[in-house]
Image (tube, rainbow, N blue to C red):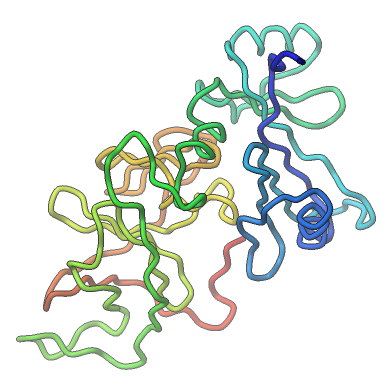
Length: 279
């Protein structure tokens, strides 16, 4: 019986002109399960229960007829030792490297993403997030549920005791319908994560600024106001949206929240056709 490889591969990321086509091929021929595809079919995420594959579009200037290997994610017992060995072989560590997830650029022109065994794709698959229809293991809480899309109102909605509510204030849910783990809602197509923290409700974009099409922050591990994206471990403050740990360099967009009449209301700009994008 073969020994477990020292650096098992847990993630492979490709770029291609037809992400959905490649995803369909991997699904049909290799038995991978498609976890998510963007509505415009520009990205897909698949898994075989162990390996995760991310597929996205080509960058400007890349040949439409090729499939480009973007990066490979591996697990190791010692991040520093592995990184030192690779640097000795001519690899370099870019600025987006973090203490928990190290990135190294290699001579072939692609990148390795290195994680220690434990939290990362290993635990995302085993212990889980909503992405895998499981509940994070480190915190006994309800998984973030998804509520129906809410159309932005065309006219102001009445509020008890007031003449009107600002027309961009949208009732997204009853107070009692949002679990401790929070809820993913969509207001006129905008994905928003609404979460209760210490008796108050907060709302932030439900896309990681690092890789919006892949990272739903509502699927990440959360401790109080700190939340970790399940894809590349960027950390954010849910109260003010600040990014606390890379590789994300931008914070989360925050939305004002009001609670009244038994409901949770989110103030969000009413989008026009083509205004919102998950790119």
